Amino acid sequence: MNKKNKAKQISIIGLGYVGLPLALLADAKGCQVLGIDVDTKKVELVNKKKSPFEDKEVQKQLKESKLKASNDFSRIKDSSVIIICVPTPVYANHMPNLELVENAAKKVGEYLKKGQLVILESTVNPGVSEEIVRPILERSSGLVCSKDFYLAHCPERINPGDKKWNVRNINRIVGALSDKGLKLAVNFYRSIIDGDVKPMKSIKEAEAVKMVENSFRDINIAFVNELAIFFSKLGIDVVNVIEGAATKPFSFMPHFPGCGVGGHCIPIDPYYLIEYAKKHGFNHDFLALARRINSQMPEYAVEQVRMGLNEKKKSINGAKVAVLGLAYKPNIDDYRESPSFGIIKSLKSFGAKVASYDPFVLGKSSAKTLSKALKNVDAVVIATAHTKFISISPETYIKNGVKVVVDGRNCLNKDKFVNAGLVYKGIGR
Ligand code: SAJ
Image 1 (cartoon, protein in one colour):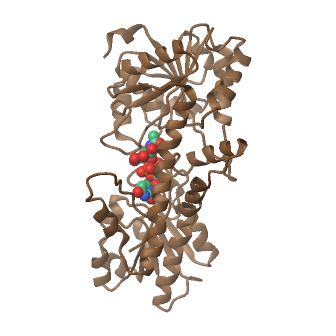
Image 2: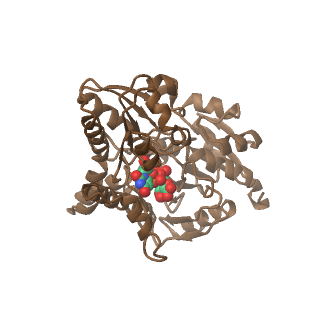
Image 3: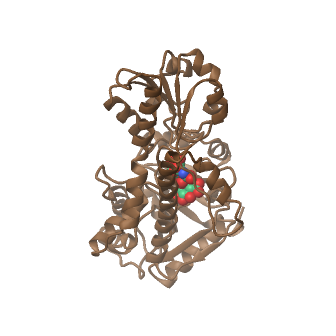
């Protein structure tokens, strides 16, 4: 509890993976928090102290919190700080989709009062706060930014499923359109965050930081994915090579190959930078190449299925294949941009009959239990390294008639599966 926060009322727009943990933290630190979401179902769940998504820690904090939720934007008028935490996806053609940010800014602008601080946490490319959000707020409020109200950017750094790093202890960076706005935003975050809060020289630099963080990860994943494809031709286990390189105690950061890059950050954010650069006559060739390599990994995984079945003199056409895992990373229920869906689509394009199963994403699973998913299948693809899948024994697969196991996350003990007589195909091993 931070005594100074007592009087502070804040509004958080968007009660998803980013907004809800932030709202709960501010509540725990003594702020009066109003959560605003256009999704009335989500508002209802939060007011009933039920987390709208699978997260044990969020659920626990929600039970203890005084957080109120509403879909009525007019209620932000009493807040000193208004934080926009809405998704920034891309369209099917990979063009940035800022509709949710624009709509939120328009609604906030309608009720904006003098002296209020607006903070954008949604991930955006440099230029969005200044060139898109500020004009919308000014037009819909009739107020002048940096004179009547303030605008800052503090990119979210939520890492779903992370047991160590959370919204309370992760360091943050903040940029704003004026010194006053920067001071207000830095002081706000320092009043609720235990980690370091670093002020940036401009709002553009703050927007650029997040783009760099996530593009850095995407290009490093693409690097090891490309290595995986070549090294497997040489019979080199790329995972062993990466683990070997990671013994170097400095200037190496291990990333690992897989059947694709999912989530609402890594496969999305680079496109914001790529498209904005194009508008300024610059081609981000390296980022674009990394996106191409990572986007092809689902097809590469399906190629392993085809080759594995071929070793058993079976065609992929007409084969029954189980895809285990729809979530984009282990033991969470988030399936946004998950490569699993690309794998399923590609398998079907080759004429395979596909069953999918994910205990965290049953609503999207074609089979509602593991045994139903594995019944009489010829091949299995582990697309998500859920703990439950790692513990499935080779014998269980063999009992169901499985001949080929494609380990899309290199999460299995290869020798165990090979020694049991199964055809094992990893990604680069
Ligand atoms: N992936 C690989 N190889 C790797 C790491 C990840 O193929 O070596 C794949 C994962 O399977 C997944 C996707 O990439 O499909 C994204 O994985 P992620 O671990 O990056 O998970 P995210 O998307 O939740 O990323 C978040 C990001 N956090 C924010 O954007 C605030 C990212 O910045 C973090 O670096 C990342 O968590 C993290 O470090 O865990």
